[in-house]
Every structure is written in C-alpha cells, then in structure tokens.
Length: 91
Ligand SMILES: [Zn+2]
Ligand SMILES: [Zn+2]
Image (cartoon, rainbow, N blue to C red; front, top):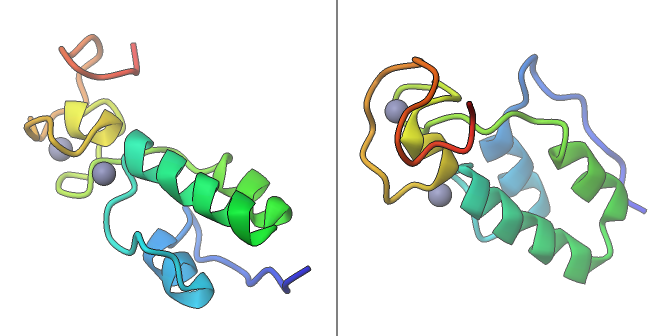
C-alpha cells in the first residue's frame, strides 16, 4: 500500500496523477476519471481509487461541475454552472 499524500483542498488531480505516474495528468472529466480508476485498480492502489471517487468532476476549462465538459471532455465548454445542461450528468 502506498502512502497517500495530503491533497490541497478540493483535490489536485494533476499532482496525484504525477505522483502515481498515471496516464491522465490534466483532464479529470467523468470519463477520464473512470480511466484513471481502472488504471489504479490494475496497479492495486485500491485506497487511492476510493479516494478519487470522493472528488467532484470539474470542467478542465471553466471548473464548473455542471458544465457538459465535466462529464466528457469532448463536449463543448459552456463556461456555465447552470443546472440541466445538455450532455451533463449533473442535474
Ligand atoms: Zn476527459
Ligand atoms: Zn466548462
């Protein structure tokens, strides 16, 4: 089991990815997060995998969780956190 570092408030996923040598270092949309979890599972980093589950998915551009790009990075960034946006998994 690896030592789990303290994360800056809100979770610094780029730091985490760098620390654990993951393939995903910049995008943490829902899709990429799932890929990262699969990778951690293969590496046997189950504690860390659980920890990632507690992070919110945020758009890599605008940082809004309800932006459609937070769900999947190929969706266009709307720069908005309004509820009910097309393509967003958040209501
Ligand atoms: Zn992504
Ligand atoms: Zn966005």
